Length: 243
Image (cartoon, rainbow, N blue to C red):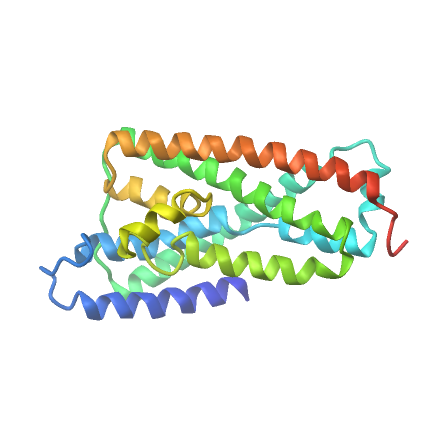
């Protein structure tokens, strides 16, 4: 059903921008028709790789007490969820490719194909960083039930709403006022979807691209340290609720 919802969302956004770009020569917010529609369709693949995640189930695992089953085994709890996370992304990527092909034959959009190898490699690097950043974000938030067991579902839902808006999943972030963009760029969210797609479309210069990748690495390090700190503190306070 998550995939079906994504399909409907793509349909709605596609027809919105298709109407805006009824005149193929029109430029809106620095995008022409080809690049805007490529951004919309690119979201299908990038969302499947980045935002499909099993880490949002960590909170429920803790609040139900199921975590104890894994803590008693000689495996890493973090690596266990990362493995499940990557497996989920693989399945969703298969669906996303099928959906993209299906929608292409239905809607017949103009696509922008990036041929610059350096940009494609940078795009792939930014995707890997985005996957790890989102995993650490969800995993860290999923640890809150160590202290507040009833909060598992509510916090995960709030996180998804924030990510949808601030990651560029609904619209390209550069249509917002520059002052708002500056604030959002200090958060990890634009580096999940918007920034990788900007690299693919060739809308960022080399310096901005390198700075964005550097900021992604910085957030990855910060979130890793934060996750470890919260994880060890949570284990000390855990009382096996539900068991």
